[in-house]
Image 1 (spheres, rainbow, N blue to C red):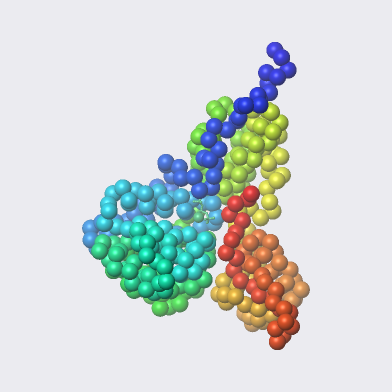
Image 2: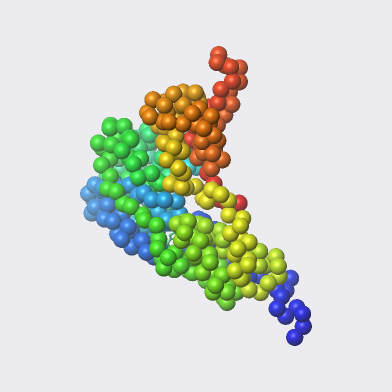
Length: 356
Ligand SMILES: Nc1ncnc2c1ncn2[C@@H]1O[C@H](COP(=O)(O)OP(=O)(O)OP(=O)(O)O)[C@@H](O)[C@H]1O
Ligand SMILES: [Mg+2]
């Protein structure tokens, strides 16, 4: 046995399909969410029989399978029928009704969008979708800066299911009553996975992503335990990739708990985006920013105090800085206005969805 037998050759890799670790990789199966998918399917099913569908709001922490489950359902729907348009919008990427509308046009194959206003585009969309029916999924809906789109769909599409997805359970409760009374969505909760489920999901991805046998069982269990503690499957995917890379950099033929621990040490303080991991005061401030839209920090503080916030201004400022660091809010300095320099605060459009 030479010295190099236990080492990985320069042209060898521990990965065989690293893309399976991407957060947006769509696995063939979405286990442990059968009930939730069944509930969603029941909302959509009337559309297949030519009747109106029901609306739903899916809520739960980051990384618990909301997006992957809905995409699985939409794919099944598209296989089943051509009469129901399946439209998925990520409102984190398309924060305005106009941008979201362009996505919808693309989804239904309408190309002549230039020089048209959002409401004009919607008239066209409604005409096309109303030939049959539509499922509209607005993922990360709390990131939408205006709710015109939601209102238009409610009013202008006759046979539809609107599926909203958010991390915030009470997002709907704070909506304008004009929308709320039309929406009346069914609530579908996505609870965090237990340890067995977390392991099952990560194992499925591991077996696709890695060469068989490279993971030491202890090392993999460590990944599962961490992902389970943080209640976020994305953490597990991140750790698998990072551990594999660390092992490969060390030319190791196996991935051991040393490699996993190195990867864990690199986990950022803020795991993906995790509003529930924030303390109450931070959550309260974030909620205010969501409600107020773009707001001067002074006005935000006054509103905060008015609604019972207890922290002094300095602490409050620090909390806003923490929210900014976690990509929950964005700030912009304004100089030279009537009030001198001030800071504008708004909800962030881009988050730490990717660790990289
Ligand atoms: N039941 C499951 N089966 C297979 N993969 C899963 C399952 N649940 C989650 N995943 C995987 O975990 C990752 C995170 O899931 P997903 O993107 O659906 O989370 P989410 O609930 O939409 O989170 P967020 O609120 O941050 O958008 C994805 O890569 C997804 O494929
Ligand atoms: Mg999601």
